[in-house]
Image (cartoon, rainbow, N blue to C red):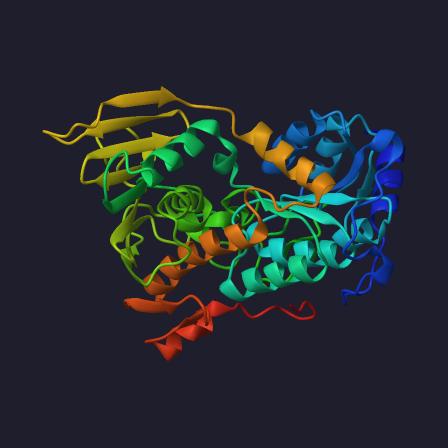
Amino acid sequence: MSEMSRRDFLRKSGTTFAVALGAAATDMLNIAPAFGANDRIVMGWIGCGGMGRNDYGLFSANPDVAFAALCDVDDSHLESAMALSGGKLQPYRDFRAVMERKDIDAVLIATPDHWHCLTTIAACESGKDVYVEKPLATSIGEGRAMVNAARRYGRVVQMGTQQRSGAHFQQVVQLIREGAIGKVTLARTWNCSNEAPDGMGLPEDGDPPAGVDYDMWLGPAPKRPFNPNRFHYSWRWFFDYANGMLGDWGVHLIDIVLWAMGVQAPISVCATGGKFAVNDNRDTPDTMEVIYEFPGFIHTYSLRKGNEAPLDGKHGYGMQFHGTKGTLFVDREGWELIPEPESATEARKGGGSAQNEPHVRNFLDCVRSRKRPICDVEVGYRTTVTCILGNISYLTGRKLYWDAEAERITNDPAADRYLTRPYRAPWRL
């Protein structure tokens, strides 16, 4: 961009707004959007990093979608996104400006995890539907507030766990529910890789890059000196902004287990692990074992970042269901059913299927029909809660018992402090 156009761009996107989030006008609530020109769904784009740009491409491929605005606190992201969109969208540096626009029907939220809650609630309050990336929230309290906002304001909210929209995942869920592998007593999920010994390294604190509103990037998170590892992409390995690998990749895997087994929450969780393999400044574990107890079966999640040997001998990540008649493995590339010896069950396998495109399409169709999407906010909440409970057990060092109806840990009052996160002023939930 030329210096003149850059200055004009930053001047237009630098409007300051009041900190308090106001309620939307009542005439915008609980009604379907009044779509824009040519019956298109007009969208705003909040969070223009790598995932946001990928999602923008998926949404833009649908002829009934028209983006009108984009928002990021990093000028380099804004400039990249403006170039990707052909310079046709209105740029903003504060998401509240997007929410104030009455011509926008829905928003794509691809911010760091610690911003998912406030942006989603603000969108619901302003009468907009929401496609928000996974995980839903960074705390159980945030997730519940997001569900409540979606229901109160009658909004369609889809979480970006796209595997639910993959035909082969749907086939696997059906096979398990039909009893193709008998009674399932153990489900395993895992992520195995090797980042040893240096991991992300140990960069020193310093000044944020030019063109970054770092205070706004932190938002409700604790005030910290800027560190490159606590910024784009790698923020997910710090509890201030996310829930580590369990909340990043584990949410995809655990979501399929809950769906296939027809359960909503664990009875108990016990986790152990630590930072054993990598020498960097992350504070989430690089090695972890989590055991979830559900009615009639257990589920384990395994994390290794210091050894990439596949847990099943073949795959670096995946989901595996062990039943009395056979074992069923699935990942994004396909699935395989391995019968038990002497079982009448037949060996079968299948390939992968499209996931991202149908997941976006499902959301758009629900914006029009007002039906709940395949990964509705409540579904995303339940999966996110399961992941967060694993981290709470890890942080407390104790086995925890969960009352899903009361949304409380029943055996450890001290652990309740992890159910919510304190917000940095002036932000509040």
